Length: 534
Image 1 (cartoon, rainbow, N blue to C red):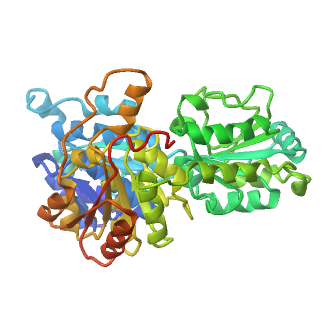
Image 2 (image 1 turned 90 degrees about the vertical axis):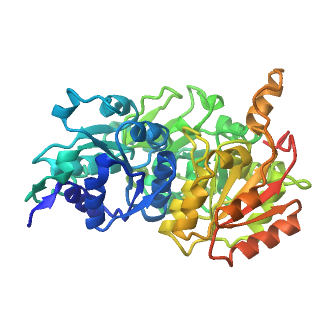
Image 3 (image 1 turned 45 degrees about the horizontal axis):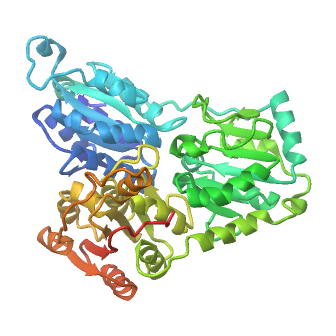
């Protein structure tokens, strides 16, 4: 193999792993690295902030399955990206974070913008490496393997300038992904017997099941055994949420929890299928009694302490379900039909009434194609939307569910659209969240992405304002002035429209599907529109 620069070796490794784009902001310390990525066939996408670049990389991963790539220059570039790296760590996103740095000898006497990137990032990454001469391929093989195996997550690689520039004849080293072993032994036998005898079995699935592609296996197993399924928000769509056994997402809405918790209390065998409670709020700490049978299928040790487990089986969801077998009498499960009643109660509890955020979501679900993928920002709208929007397949709704960081929805949607250009994509965002990341509308313009952005306009941090009132605190730091979002959209090269009723919203959405640029639909919902909604 002919000599290649360190930057090219890094690019070739990422290209072999399926990566097609790298996102970030250039700096002098990453120029050779960027050239190497470009030479390897990765398109570099200039963003307005490193956080947005990381979320675009995540959105692209949801669309294509290839690990995301984020590039930042030393110092402020690295510091800017801390939020999205922490999000990737908590939300289980395989992100390769490449940072430029000065050579070690130079750092001994040159301090401008220089600090220890690895020390900053180690607590929020699965691993942090510093590329070195003669071992670039080895480092990248490790980084990709760690980022994509087990529970996925971010891996940081610090790339000194001289390493990116220097040539080498090193051969590529494929990443080694550890094999999986099906469960066996006495623990499995005990769990099998408990499941076989169950009369009220219930499954709860989470983000690991999505990342393992376990949806078809879960659907087949639940159908065969008449087992209803609750998911976390991240796992929505593992079973088509229109089907009778799918009870939708849970974890943030007290209204939904009040309907689902009685099923958990009544169950005689609870199965946790790739369920990581990092998405769940405090109401889901110890949600079942210590004397209930709980079988967990997990590929990684669980050390969270959120709940007790009777039988923990180390396996993928598919392997675990195959090894567990079936319920002895599926037709006799849940004789009181409580799961069916719960599903009906959920539909009634979140039915829209009059113009407001619920009507916005219901109108767009009806107006948009079934294949539409949506993203949601953090805030009150995300909780209601997650309960109302039915996902037909996994990754039909993408969001920050563990870290719950703001300004993620628009770049997530942009990244997904980049990887799946024929799929209709909507980003739902509050007005404060859109204001936080307005610059990325210019990025979307430059990429030519016909994205639909729906901004809920109430001129308030609605979720925090609700909490203030709920704790009888004064209104403080949650209200702000009005922004003319349609005018901003036009100024940044897109199209904007203000809507205040369902008919206008449906018309605006249908028109947006025909445009070759982005559309901002500002839906004015008024103050306190979420009172009693979730």
